Image (cartoon, one colour):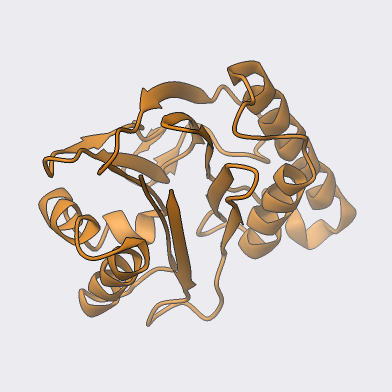
Length: 213
């Protein structure tokens, strides 16, 4: 398995409110996107990622382990928000995957996404956004229960798994994602996706993780 990742602030935002976790030696990867229009999005996303990094997750972690780690990250964001009045209401999306061999478990909250590109070039969405028209029903840190979706998939040789924030998916449509995700090695595909988002306007932060099997 090859792993590549990249995050960019884009052409419009003043700061990067995305964060990522890449621990391929443990088989653990994640992206988080601090909520736009809310305070301290960068603090929210980094708090969640730091919490997950300190969780006892590995590629063998079961669904219950992913849910427990996500709940702990949610509580960490809530606690961090309580530390300063200016952080009230901060939150973040999350896509988290653990990979062992050709098996991946993918958890998500919010509108960051995961896709699987099969060895024939077919692209399949693994997540369904928890929101509509920019309004999220779920995010880590908000004052409501978090109910992540979790799927388990097989990633055969030649397939590619993509984790990304909406800075990619709002700028690049699915057919283009499928084309770019299949190009070159993992790092070349990752760079191609990010560069396409920037070339198409780059109005948001963009974060991409590509796993090539």
